[in-house]
Image (cartoon, rainbow, N blue to C red; front, side, top):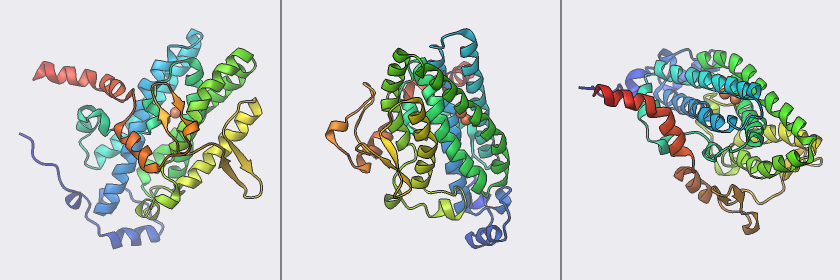
Amino acid sequence: MSSSPPTLEELAPRSEDEVREHLAAGKLVEGLQHMSPEYLKGIRRILTVSADTELISAPAYLRAAQHAPALNNFGSAISIIQDELAHAHIGYSLLADLGVDTNALIYEREPGAFKYPYAFDVALDSWYEMVLANALYDQAGFVLLSDVHQSSTFGPWKRALAKVDKEETFHLRHGRTWVKKLCADPRDKRELQRSLDWMFILTLEWFGLPDAQKRHGIQLEYGFKGMTNDELRQTWMAAVVPFMEDVGLDVPAHHDAEQDRYVIDCPFPTRFDAEAKRWMLDEGPTSWDEVLVRWKGRGPMNRDYVTRLQRGYRERCEATA
Ligand SMILES: [Fe+2]
Ligand SMILES: [Fe+2]
């Protein structure tokens, strides 16, 4: 018989004012003893998004790694996957310390309830897409986690991210080295461009709703993140757009010197045909409400990837039931 899990109020003893005072004094939050229910709820949410993203990247990258041109390239991809699983482990372990039943969270949750970015729901089907995922998705992960590393008020996560940041740097360097190398061959370059056409815009979406439509409130106030969605998107474009321009690949964004910011040159957000991996740019921009519906419905690979991750646990449970 299972007893009901403790409530946020039972786990987190401090009031919101006490947390604010603690943070105003420049102190980090080290565990439940320093948390209020709101803080606990917020940090659980952002840790879940982060751990889910790391975890789902493993089956997504494994699928793409099978297209590695040689065995040692497959080995590099596998070592990246290993890193991602370790990153996921860090997130879920911290969640366990915060009173979350992580077996239920990882192995018993419905695929549709996972909280990673929609981009991972779209299959990576070639080595081109593997290395572009490193150059684009790992860059997005790096931007987000560097921000958390700098601004997080949750000490245990902040410290753990020092290691994660270094490994993400390796992943995106792997992507960039390969993109550069493949661009030397016209046929490879054309293939890269075809994949970049859908993957670039999908990564723009990664950072979520524009600031004008989203209130961050507590996320910024409690220091779960330091930058807003638009600032994070700008930081990502500042890293990716000049690189793609250097290697001669086209992206629908450019730096506007007058405004000193990156500007998106295609309808955004816009409709996406996930099966064909194609943006319906001719139809013009759509609303973020429609994008939210697509995200909520999840994409083609969601069930496949999550089922794969949960299979061993489920089989063992069934065998011992
Ligand atoms: Fe990672
Ligand atoms: Fe990574």
